[in-house]
Amino acid sequence: GAVVSQHPSWVICKSGTSVKIECRSLDFQATTMFWYRQFPKQSLMLMATSNEGSKATYEQGVEKDKFLINHASLTLSTLTVTSAHPEDSSFYICIVERESEQYFGPGTRLTVT
Amino acid sequence: GNSVTQMEGPVTLSEEAFLTINCTYTATGYPSLFWYVQYPGEGLQLLLKATKADDKGSNKGFEATYRKETTSFHLEKGSVQVSDSAVYFCALSVETSYDKVIFGPGTSLSVIP
Image (cartoon, rainbow over all chains, first blue to last red; front, top):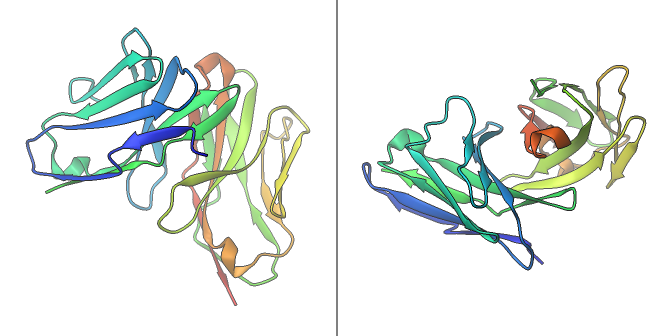
């Protein structure tokens, strides 16, 4: 069965609003989770590394004030897209590493109108 | 830094043709190498992987050999099927970089009957 879940699986929001996406590791603890986004017909681009109990590490070019990451427990990381705009519409995916295996969340499709 | 380069697509093949998708990488340290597949409308799935030089990953008739001397991890299949039509992503992770996965740009494959 699935070892990583994401919620919601899809969301439509209006421009200017904020959206929170959850990534949960099921049945195991994860000190590190990775957030990616995938634009249509493009590859997955790493946005940030979420570390339990400390600040996330953002990749170059990713605005930390726009994409807020909170890794409050060993099984949950959240990504909040603040003041969303249509260009933020994308597929957001978390990946969790466990015993040298990478486990993909099913992804969250965000559409900003 | 760490990066992955793939041959540009789209690639169109007839059924039962031989497939090669080239992948080369740049990495600091000793990466693990992966091929992921994304079928239309779905998320990424791990296809195969290799964790050290000269290892061969294989799955569903696909193979790839970790070549340290040429920093390559080319994907091959002897006889493709229509159901292999998908986008294929080469990727790497390096333990010294918190195992975050770096994806190549992806290569779209279409197999026609």
